[in-house]
Amino acid sequence: MEKYSQFRDRGSGIAPFFPISSTPAGIYLPVHIFLFLFKLPFFVTVATTYFLFLQWFPLGSLFKKAILWMILGIPGIWWIDLQIDGVKKGSLAKKHEGRIPQPSSIIASSFTSPIDSLYLAAIFDPIFTVSYPHTRQVRRISLLGAILRALSSPQDQPPKSAKLTDLKTLLVENPQRVVVVFPECTTTNGKGILPFSPSLLTTPAQTKIFPISLRYSPPDITTPVPRHYWSFIWNLLSQPTHCIKVRIAEVVYNTSKPTDHATEKKDRYLTNFLDTLGEDSAMTSSTDTLTSLSDQPAEVNPEEKRILDKVGEALARLGRVKRVGLTVKDKAAFVEAWSKKRR
Ligand SMILES: *[C@@H]1O[C@H](CO)[C@@H](O)[C@H](O)[C@H]1NC(C)=O
Image (cartoon, rainbow, N blue to C red; front, side, top):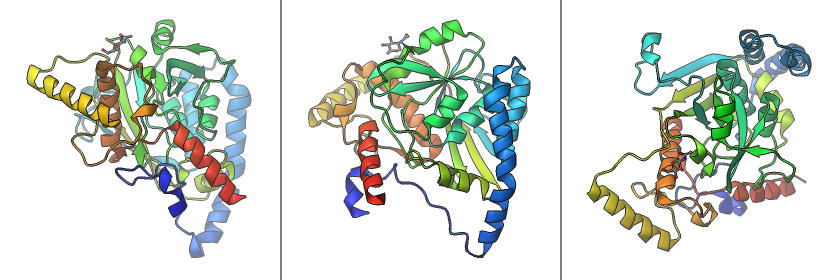
């Protein structure tokens, strides 16, 4: 592990890119092999039928969601533990009003597994987007694209040929849809929240941004290392069940609330002070220190940064983890080092 110490967050020691290995099956190995072989044909049949054929037909959102639930159900993902900020567990659905994403809102989701997109699609039938660290523009992708994105290499820049847009435009063009953003840009193992892309800043001021954290138990179906298709499918299908912990935070708007003068002054002082140190101001209250402000795109002003920080803090709080300073670039370096070791 020690040779990978550069891929730990310097302040908190969190290593967000290491794959999480499963608990050894031990004597249950034959059961796991049986489960895998039993579920695989169903899983492959339903998934390919959907993604090759059914998704192209105008079958209605409800029908499509039903099939997506089947794709989730076959591996045993049916324990959904949902908690919404400000709503007591098990309270009436009426109380949820305004606290769950509706058409024309944005979901800022944690990004750890292909299941993230599948689950969000089964609930919200949203539009998926890819964000990049240094641009406010996003690339629209399909559900399958979003699922595969969780298993592909980190991208620091959009591909040259990519057609880019921004969240404002997407919302105007699709007033009946929810738009999903993965502001961390690349997957982690769920142990830390990476610095955000500025893409959320193109959200119109009246649009609701819902930070949503998805955690898995057991956590071995997260895919921080790209292209580990087989271990993902094995971990997914060989276990009897998986649980998703879904946490929805209170809405964040892309505006800054007027703060009272004193705190603002203090904030500004701290921001300047920490900026000169080359560190992030977000973590002033906790012990961890972000390591690489230089990777934050320079075009984000303090006001905008505060909004990104607010969403980032919400995701960290919901996931019971910390924000880290490691970036998409660090992950790319990690993946390279990791695959060398394997060779
Ligand atoms: C979002 O908020 C930031 C900070 O207040 C502002 O700079 C940006 O223009 C806003 N974006 C939109 C689309 O209103």
